[in-house]
Image 1 (cartoon, rainbow, N blue to C red):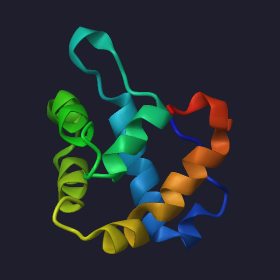
Image 2 (spheres, one colour; image 1 turned 180 degrees about the vertical axis):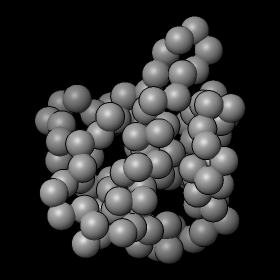
Image 3 (tube, rainbow, N blue to C red; image 1 turned 90 degrees about the vertical axis):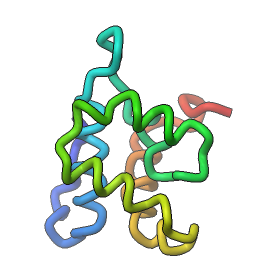
Length: 103
């Protein structure tokens, strides 16, 4: 589970996407594997080639509302998507040292 900041109720977009990412991390894929928080960040970027395979791998285990939220990012232009998800992405990236991320 992704820890939520204490003032999360003051940041509804951030809260929505952190909760969605937490659901994604809790979803079990084939073979019992789960996404890490850093792996789940791909779900905030539908332009990433890993977006569809990752979402498809956990789709059956996600609540419908969460799945709909991830699908809603697809038709958005990059700037609109960034406005919706940037704070959650930055928060998660700040939790981990840069060397943990893929290069």
